[in-house]
Image (cartoon, rainbow, N blue to C red; front, side):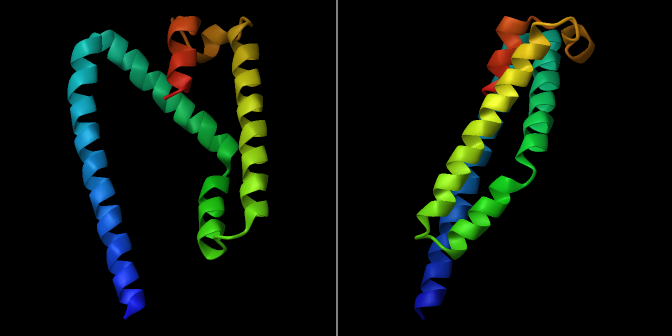
Length: 126
């Protein structure tokens, strides 16, 4: 009985979170393209796609593994500490690579006709 009640609560919470996320995404997708215009929206989409793949490469599935293990053992603080350090080191490495690329001539090969300071580091935060 308790298991079913807990499952029902989790399902309704997840469903509610997905509905709210859907609403926010619909509003965002209706505002951003019109506000940026075709060229800048294309640049925005190109850069966000690049950074999702770039960060996903460095994540190597650890976030999914972390959440899986954390739900199996919610009271294990060593796991949270390890992932916190892993995330911090990965972030420093990614920012370092971006800084090196943006300050070299290799930048135009990766991000052609993009203003580094305005778009690349701002989109990295998205």
